[in-house]
Amino acid sequence: MASSKKQRHGELAARLETLLNTVVQPGQRLLLGFSGGLDSCVLLHLLAGLRTKCGYELAALHVHHGLSPNADAWQVYCAQTAAQYQIPLITRRVTVPRDSGLGIEAAARSARYAALLAEPVDMVVLAHHQDDQAETLLLQLLRGAGVKGMAAMPLQAATENGKPALLRPLLEVSRAALERYAHDHGLQWIEDESNLDQAYDRNFLRHHVFPVLEQRFPASHVTLARSAAHFAEAASLLDEVAREDAVRWISHGRLNVEALRTLSEPRARNLLRYWLSAYLSTLPNTRRLHEIQRQLAQAGAEAMVCIEVGEGQVRRYRDEAWFDNGGVQPLQREITWRGEPVLQLEGGRLHVQQVLGAGIALARLADGGLTVRARRGGESLRLHPARPARSLKNLFQEFGIPAWQRAAIPLIYCGDELVAVPGIGVASEWQVAADHTGLVVEWRLGEC
Image 1: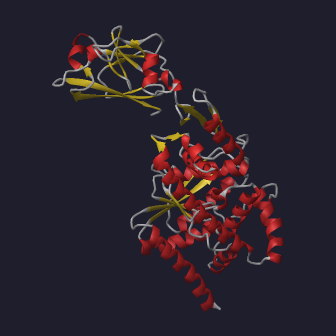
Image 2 (image 1 turned 30 degrees about the vertical axis):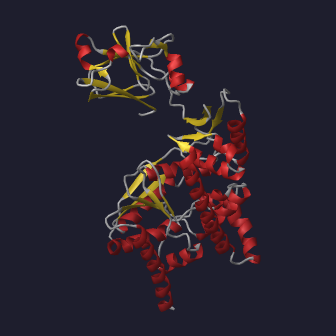
Image 3 (image 1 turned 90 degrees about the vertical axis):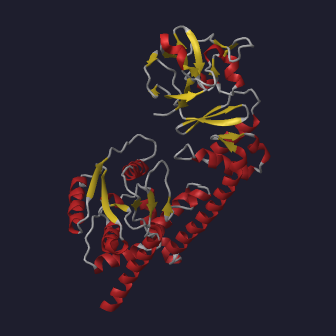
């Protein structure tokens, strides 16, 4: 019996070692999301035993949600357990909003992921297992999720903006196998009392639905998890199609609305989802997506389409769909430029650099500096010495700057004279000669 246990548990460690050697580079920093429950205690034990062999650095992070009266005791337990393995433990206290509209489960999960992904590590490791995967798939099915939702949780997931990647190395391991491993190694763990609260959908499935399913279909956890893998493969193919379509139909972050008329309905919606996923953490449901597609594709050429979606708005301008995240704010004050390479303004940053033969003639500024002002209306600019001045309104239209962004564009003055408008050009009498140094001013909307 002892030999059988040793072989079984050695096989689990060997499988994990093979996976880690495939996805983790020596010297990388791994961070385990450590709740103190069964799953994360087993994974902590396994990762601690393999860190020298695989050559990674290991730390753990415990998120203190403050939702349970036992939360402080759990934090102490996690600290003591991590210390036994000589693993550094980070604790992050988070506030879980009860009125976010997400529900307590989802809000707590969102806060937990935000805390984990904010750490300066290479990879966040999570202890989700096969039973979790099956539950997630069934929940997504009951919610009417699409292919991506049915893919449930991926083994690996890349993140953006320099955040660490995600790794779930136990997705093919059942909870029963983890329990056997924990008992055979004398591990202790926390039992969260909320796991018994059947007001939560996942607990209801776990305590009522899956026991009945397993009586009729004993391998239901395994087969549902396998189906999630099939859906993940299908979702990957859909993403591949969307990336191919994006080469033709998406430019500078904007979606050519003609794609929604030209492509087949399913393919057009697939591209629309792909485009929106660059801006939204949660995609709109199918009904909302259909409505966005309809409005973008069917509205008249001059229609001011503006659709509230998640954290921003989808707008249409000149047959292109733009995503507006609400970062457009008009300048509230006049600012004097004192030679800074970057000016931080309300709605973005103004970058100024000296360039030979381009921009505002630096020599003309000897008797006065530049000021940055907001648009007030009625301004005009002459870009060519042989042509008349034109109103900014007409120039904005000519250069394809949408109406909702115009109020945020800072105007560059010398005294009372409009010298330049970023994205439009420099007044003809202020343009630098080819052999002289000029100031090139670039406006980057939404930069913080």
